[in-house]
Each structure stands twice: as C-alpha cells, then as structure tokens.
Length: 267
Image 1 (cartoon, one colour):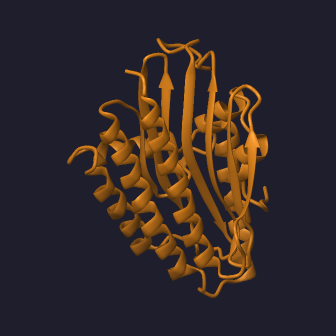
Image 2 (image 1 turned 90 degrees about the horizontal axis):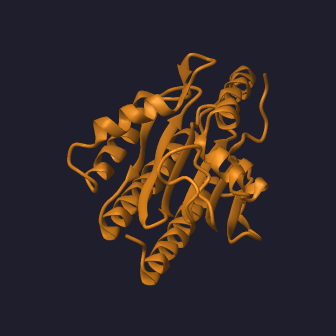
C-alpha cells in the first residue's frame, strides 16, 4: 500500500524533530560549539540537510536527514528492482576527541517502492576502550525500544547487527553491537512508532555514555591507538556498508554521505 500525503508529512516532521533533539543533546555534550547545517537539493528529486558539529569534545558529529526519489529503485535484484521509489531517513554518527568515549551510529529510514513500503535501520556502539557498563546500558536501552515492534524481536535484531557489522577482511565485528533491522512491513503508525522508539532510546542513552567518558584522562598512546582503530570504521563504511552504497547509487549528496567517516585516521 502506498503512503498517503499526510503520512509522508508526518514522517518528515518526525525526522526533523528527531534531528533537532539529537543535535541539541550533542551540542550539550560538547559545550564548545554549535551544529552547522547546510541544505542540499538533488536534481533528480528530493534533498536533505547535513548538520555537522566540530568542537573540542565532539571531534566530529553528523546528524543528517534526507528524502530522495527516483523512477527506478537501484536494487541489484529482487521484486522491487526498477520500480519508482522514495527513501527518507535520519542518520547520525559521532567521533569523539577522547579515546575513552565510543563511536556510535544510528540510522532509521522508510522506503516506498512501487506500491509497498518498509522500514529499516539500527544503532551500534564502537568503543576503542570498552567499558562494560556502557555496553550493558546501550544494549538495555535498545532492548526496551525493540518492544515497540514485538516483545521478543531484540535477540533477532541484535544478532542481525553482529552479522551486518562484521568486517570480513578483518575477521571481526567493528564494535560491541546494537541492533539492525530491515524490510519491516506493517501499519504506518506501527512502523513510525518503532522508528521513534529507536531514535528516542539512542538520543537518551548515547549522550549519557558520552558524558561519562568525555572527561576521562587519556594518554597520547591511547589517542594513537584510537586513530588506528578508526581505520576499521572507515574500512567498513567504504567497503561494506549498504547505506553508503545506496546513497552513492541514488545520486545523494556526497559530502553528507561521507560525514560518517572519521575526521582523522591512521593505518
């Protein structure tokens, strides 16, 4: 079933509100800088807003929203290939100055292809120096959010995350996991409600983790190790991430797509 105009408006309003709330939390975590926003227009249809924070605490944080459309869905194969599509979503990632503060990523999106629509997304935590309470609290927040879809879906979405964020050429996961989901279909309100539950959980727990770690003393050796660890993040996003490929295949804003990459990295 195709989305109604008022449903598309509600989706866009949700994405804008989620972006603004998360940006405000990240600004509060940093305390030294403000998010700088730039809108972009896609000639083939749609556009978005790229919002980036570069401060003394948050070395680089991005919170982007976009909505793109086109006459042919760029699937390699499958029943949806070649059909008209619209994809709208929010994506965020944060790289902290302090090597004790973890990288984290969250994405939610709704795709309308032909006469059907579905949602996808997820969130994961990638610490260089792991703290058990951070990992535990992050997973607990996402487990609670998953109840907005079904009471027992969290184990499936957590395992899906570990599988998706596996780096084959490194033979390891890129972090301590989280959740990943895709092709979830159903009532629009239920789908939007789950997207909201995931973004609300992330907007609450991740800044609280950053507040714990941003002031922890660190050494130059730890900072050097963090820069090499970031290489794995860059490798996954460039070689394996489906979202990166989708953005490039649909003619999205290149600068916004690569906001996810670390500001400084070593190999």
